[in-house]
Length: 265
Image 1 (spheres, rainbow, N blue to C red):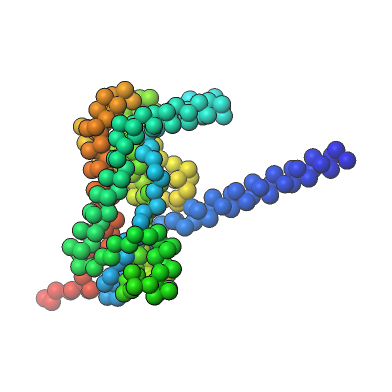
Image 2 (cartoon, helix red, strand yellow):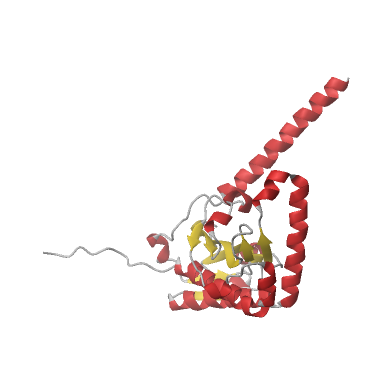
């Protein structure tokens, strides 16, 4: 009887493990490689809708210590508690910073897209609500050819070890979907600012990361104490990163020439 219970629990744990693995694989599979906007789609793409971004309401402050991974689970819990404490202190010093940075990023995306020749519709709704509004012929989504779905996965200051400085950065996914058939027209995942060696695609649940190197020594801080001493000034680093992220997302939708011309001899 006891052996049957043990065997049943073993099989149950295996099933749970497989389900978790399938879920993670599915998450990674949604972003397996960058997708550029195809030339044939550019002719049809005139109006782009910009729904609200998916973003945690928290600025991330983290310093990883590889030794915690060796010690075990209890040390990781301690690290998480310390990380949360630092995050609360930093956000307390800059309570409106996240909202200001996101607003700057939205403005940057709209400005750049309009300069590229698109008409941009600012939507005060989520991506899924915008898709639903388009299907139901809601006037707010009328005439929109595609929607940009922006998912900010990490935003804040991070250090990969006690020997590395805190640096500002953002990891985000940006997908452009056609409204009519929900076809994925363009897709990319950006790391703006973080040290590429400190990011794990597995933890972020993505299949790849396109790294954009931005570094300004004014916004590198040796330790948390130094970061807090310059908490107000450090906010400029995150706003700068948000601006670069906006340029990256919109810049990937730049319209290319229709054809390459071959010069006659």
